[in-house]
Image 1 (cartoon, rainbow, N blue to C red):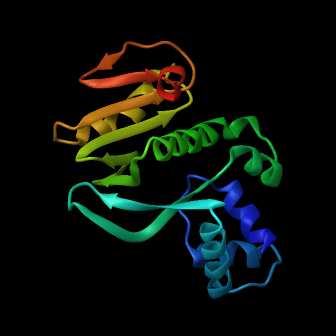
Image 2 (image 1 turned 60 degrees about the horizontal axis):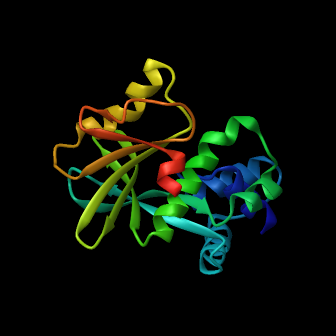
Length: 185
């Protein structure tokens, strides 16, 4: 059970499947089955330690049954379980953005559109908000990678990129760029 929790904590924001987790744990020397992993993941979700975020097909307007993502209830708990790595700042920030959206009462999914991914599709009271979360966008390649999925969406719902560090134009092609400070406050 602890190995499953550690695996989930180490892989927040990544696609997860019981088969994949069982395979990874078995290859690392912990014998388990996908049924056992599924039971543990369900128990963690029912205890509100992890949140399952389903994928939403923006083109077909339907929830997908394929690999959801898991986010942890407390990033400090994640650091305690999986250790701190400076390279994980972006994933921890994405997790914090997810938790803030939940706190504000949004229903949150992971968006998928023609092979591109939108970090979050949030809905509340008939509103739809598309959200990308990123640590920084200093390089033009990073900026394009974060904005491209939002540009692909051909509707008039609000689109934002939440950036943890740096200062940027507040609007790029109709997409609002929001600092972490403004987003969380």
